Length: 451
Image 1 (cartoon, rainbow, N blue to C red):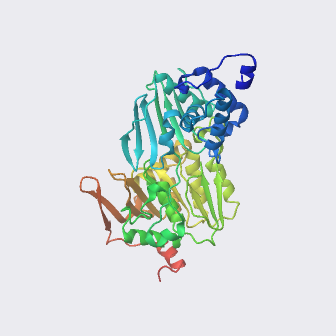
Image 2 (cartoon, rainbow, N blue to C red):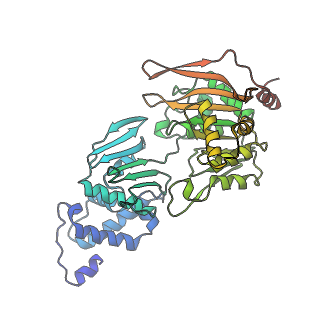
Image 3 (tube, rainbow, N blue to C red):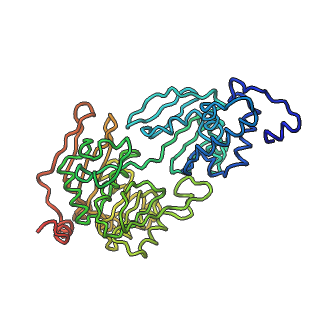
């Protein structure tokens, strides 16, 4: 029941607001009802990217408090806390608003950690009790049409802004909540490219891979040449290693005259504005969890992109067997200069991961039958990872020159990086014995990179 209506029926309300509005359940219910009747559900979603969302919610809360307590001016701090509690993520709101925080990890009501600049730190943020935490988790699950229960004690959800939330309750464990924030970090390959790529986020400072210690000058120059020569790239690494950031850095070097089709599960690649770029994004079902719940998948978009006259095809990440299969097919149709990423622990491991993904669904395809199209699809395989201090580093750049007579990949290391000084230092090394294979040599000559 709305505040004015309640007073018309003679319900008594305090003239002055109580010291702790968050502890007044009836008042919270009344303000929540005002929000629900005044604003669209999309605005009330704490993960919504709607512009001025917070200001619109706080304006409604301010108006309702002014009606309930006409003799008191609503305290801005209390209005903000009510906004966080009723239409936000409660105690986690400040962590989610911190641009340096990439992950929020809740192990319990008073045990909360964040990843900031690649390192885990304990947070002083606390929930009132376990019920307070459980209520927020139920709220997050409900936003994607899910429900935490004994039958479904684990929920993995992709939120409206692209963030990923994982929720766990007993009997499996917890209650535990993990949120990986959706971020679009822009980082130039090296200093001479930084000025043309616009502003960068806080985590990206310094604004290029070389200055940040993630690449040597020689590696950056080689990769810039590889993009100009239209070599196909496969970038491997663990979660949060910097695969998407590196791919975006390389895409920024593509000439604006070329038509690029970018296909992603959720828009993540922070590519500078340029002509002839078309972005395609998956459509998720009401569960909005992972690739199994997508109504329009990466594979669907890849098949459609071939009809859109692309010069280059870019796939944000290969996750499923069908995506791997269709991507190999697409890259074997002559779209030079394309690229994608994959979860793997090294260049060689990335190729095995591709094989495993394809054969998980297409069991009739043998390993020897797979290796030829994989070797034709990609020219370079890169491995990116993180040091102990959180810095992203390209640890390996190798050419995939084909398949040898014994059926193994002809993987030729070009650059490597080795950890030094207790896993916080790195030493880059160029392979003196490296010689480009025939396919790479031909592409370099075709683009006028070498004679």
